[in-house]
Amino acid sequence: MNLSMKTENTCPSLVAKDYRSDTKPVWCPGCGDFGVLLSLTKSLAELQLNPKNVAVISGIGCSSRIPAYLNTFGFHGVHGRALTIGTGLKVARPDLTVIVAGGDGDGFSIGGNHFLHACRRNVDMTYIVMDNELYGMTKGQASPTSAPDWEYGKLTPGGTHMKPFHPLVVGLASGANFIARVSGTNPNGAVPIISEAIRHPGFSLVHVLSPCITFNREQLEWKKMVRDAVVPTTNDAGKAARYLMSDDGFNLGILFKGDRLPYDLKSEKTVDGPADLEAQFSV
Ligand code: SF4
Image 1: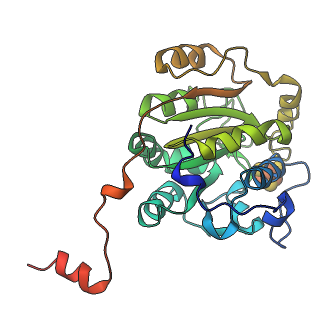
Image 2: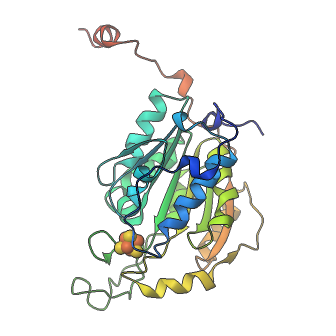
């Protein structure tokens, strides 16, 4: 398979730690996001990407701190808008590898509409969502992916009683071109999957089961519950949908790899500078 535009500009001989910044993560010890940081740096090294050609964009939340911990370009944006910033960046700079990262609250609640349209547009970038089924940074409120009976604090006595959002089914139905689930508790297992997501042309969605050990200690059990998916990767969206609708949420692997062409960045009219921009809008 041809490498997508996401992986041009390689830089050999770097190892995972070369992609880490000197900033020490402020995550709680044991947070699943540490595993994602490790997986991502290992994937970037595996792909030999030049850090100067990688941009990691995030929104707001515990997991959205990740750009600060990387030695690539990064942008810690506003709540729920990471995909819009990533899309704009990729359209303006198709030579960059654009990775968008964040949590379930950021991506599926306030950013939910952007999520649908990012899947639909199929711009060539990778979206890594660290899902802990709650808002960690604001002390553990229910998020769109919380179980209906999960109770924490006074805001949701007895739980939300609402059907949780299913990111992979919604992503598939909206047009995501690559769909995978990995675990923050198995960083090495996630590396080849994240690498493949970055390589695959179009919009790649990587859903990470990333436990919040501070506000939902039951998620420590996830480590024992996850397993490799028994079905092979398919490019048949119908098959993938049937599988995703019936799975229990703990099957890991690349669950769908589509062959839809990514949004054609080259057909976009580019702006050469302020004078060109002014000319385009002159009346
Ligand atoms: Fe991780 Fe939860 Fe701590 Fe946030 S509050 S850093 S999600 S363990």
